Length: 475
Image: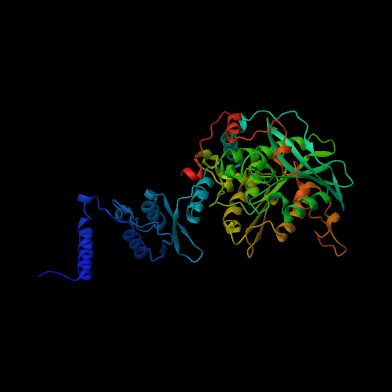
């Protein structure tokens, strides 16, 4: 009998195909099955929901797929099945799992906790930790390429006219940190100027408008009014740095090197000023600036106080290559931002976190790990956590309100200078300048010094490297 109905034919063909699949699950075909089937089996075994919202499993077939399921261990089972395709499963807040492309800078919370447990068994006292810390510091220095950086040129910094406000002043700076490479930023100082002023370095994150944004200006002005010389500077290939290197190069790994080097060499400059106190040096920044805060604190012994904001996490180490592109988290056979933050011990550190980003578990997971290391020095009182459960990823008002007293305490700043008649910290007297007031070169390429490098390849060459990045359009 001929089958004339096309729909019936298709149904029979699908049934035959499915039957063939079932029969094919033998050693003759290396037990090959569609990955979707194995994921459904995992859902049944572990009573979980696994979402493939981006349809990443379509058409994927895996040999020995069902053999990769490890009874009693969901995380290992998922890793065994998804890893061959560079896929991972992240657990959501509602308990479900979502399949995503592999991200080298991010792991699941379960894996993060396992790593912290592993790391904690590497050292049990101050001496063992100091050995580990030295190993990490040497590796990070090499990974960033700081050991290959040319010396800072002896050229004079380019300073703009000073603007005077209530209790502080602002001037902009262009500092030649490498031959032909200029870092641009602004310097906020107490006004009238005081002797033995503290120093605060404030690296930027990826928040919109960079160092020109209102909250950045307010933060710097407040610290200056309290008695600190504050230096805020552009990210690489952001702000006026784009005059030398286009914004697309911000995702080159060398961006990470330049950002760390910028912080260190701006501090070099600040320490030449005869009215600063080299024993009182703070650093604070949010998001990517939080990463830079941790890096500078870990690598530069001159830093005495640190406040990394919304970045200390065991499961996330920065999604931008300007934070994680140099492989520093591969140091010591694997580290993370929690261990990097702990490298600041025993110096005072305030970790600011929130409930709506990757820092949501800091009070229960990351903070106890770091506090233990501070305990090796008998300095648990020097490490604090300000957690804002109902807030998100920013360096907003409440987070600044937590930072000001901490910096005042450990940098010996005068908090009374920023309090109103009611005794509350008051930011209202700070002036938010227009973007153009903060420019060094008036945001015009023709105003750059004649020796300014404008080729990313030449920047790599300064470190004896080649630019190997595959640009997005070639991927």
